[in-house]
Image 1 (spheres, rainbow, N blue to C red):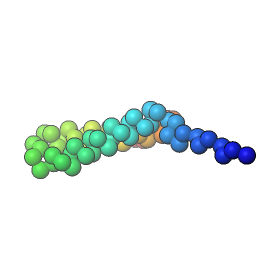
Image 2: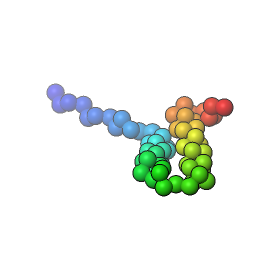
Image 3: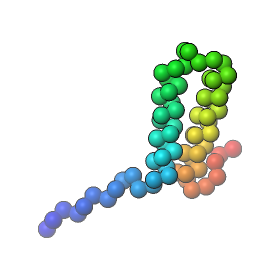
Image 4: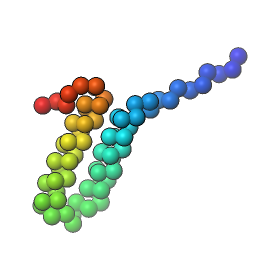
Length: 66
């Protein structure tokens, strides 16, 4: 009896893509935070919140939390 092939665990491509985007943005902020202007920091925070909402929306298949 041969072993069953492993199913791809990461089958939700849209979720994987938005999580990758969130991770890249978070790493960028971690590297540059001390050199960022207040305007850049504000934009980065807004983008983090938007990406978190997108992750929620894609993961649950519904609307982003309010």
